[in-house]
Length: 277
Length: 315
Image (cartoon, rainbow over all chains, first blue to last red; front, side, top):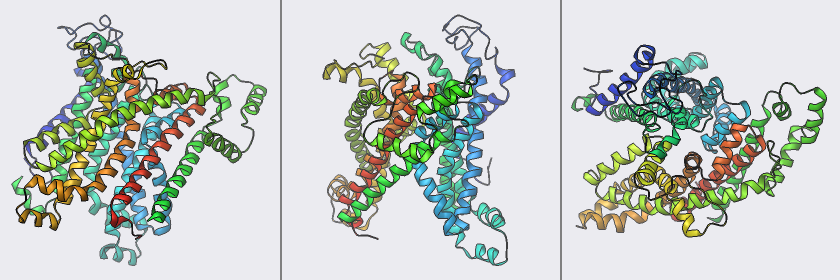
């Protein structure tokens, strides 16, 4: 089987399989989960049994069901954040490359300042001002993350903006946004697609990290970072309760990384040489 | 050369100023202001007015910014909103704790990862290199708290070698302090070592593709000799900036790790302040973290200029 005219490597297949399973679990959560995400069905940290396959959490909820529902929240928030971040980052990045030196100067310096603070610290400051709710969380991370996307999009578009066909389109009298959409975007797409995977991983870990700190997705919604936080004490009794959601997060990021590696390896070689993969 | 270094240092200070404006401005965009946030919906307009005057909120923003900044430079961050304590008194011991933890992690991480990175570069494509590649990729892909809890499970619960909570207090001896903070330091080490190892390997290998290295090989020198004698001196500059960059990365890691191990550092103070929405404390912690981050990045650039003669000429 081929995807976009390329044959995925073995590790890419593993990655694609992981992503597919996660997405299916997220979409089919209400049908797959044996219990609801908020119903208490056992005692505190009941060990795994036939009824509760991974045991119960700190207030007796089924960990497996919460993992399954958590997939919706955790993946959904990270995906939405990444899409928003790309919409902002690429638009502004292309604008900086095509729109002339003044726009470029203002946008680039602004991004430089934002990137000179660690993203986690910026996020903590913004969340302390607005309080943590899901829309605030998504917007905050999207805006902060779009600075990284901006840098890449601008660098790629800078190389394209000096090419003849862009010049021709400008001389023809096409508008700025038409040039960005029809001339720059199609040619800048391949590196941006790989970047999308990497940014998704980053945002995914970022949301999980903030939820773990108690500042991300708030209860009653199940999400993996928050589940680790809720069950953290169980580790002192040698129980696996906080590790399940952490493993779920780790496997997802590794899966996406495997696919990204494969996409990067396609881009780095001439299109004719892809047969040997 | 001195001029370039001075320029870079001034740039660092300017960046820090811009950052301080940003941190201050972030708390100004709050709908309403701090006073209404603290007093809540039920506050009467009179009470709000009195409280605003008490906090000095009735003066223009730029005046308050300069007051805040000049206070911050002298170490005066004002008082916390939630418990009325003087912020600097609370920040100072925690800042020392955080420095201690980060320093401990750096002492383990830097020699380990630079050494292993060079070993991986020497054995490029062989088993050791591939193993290092897979292990570091996995460490980078998993969340910080996952590594921390795995360490707790193995070293504190299954084998009771180290405590799972790193409680430290001022009267504690140095040896005991090191013992108690071993697990968080190990977790931090794994976080930064993975990045540092990969970047060291890449910078050694990029030097390896130079013509003079090929010449050294053609002279019949062994691979390890070429790397140690010919490649390393030229790879030193990128490696030094890699180290400084990753020490800056420690700052981000420290926040989560401190929370996992309940370590009384500045990261945990900041997280607590954010969940209580205690803005002055958040501002103070944010400024300290940003200052350390900008400082280390500036240091990385200056060291790179010092080590690599080619960067000394102005472009």
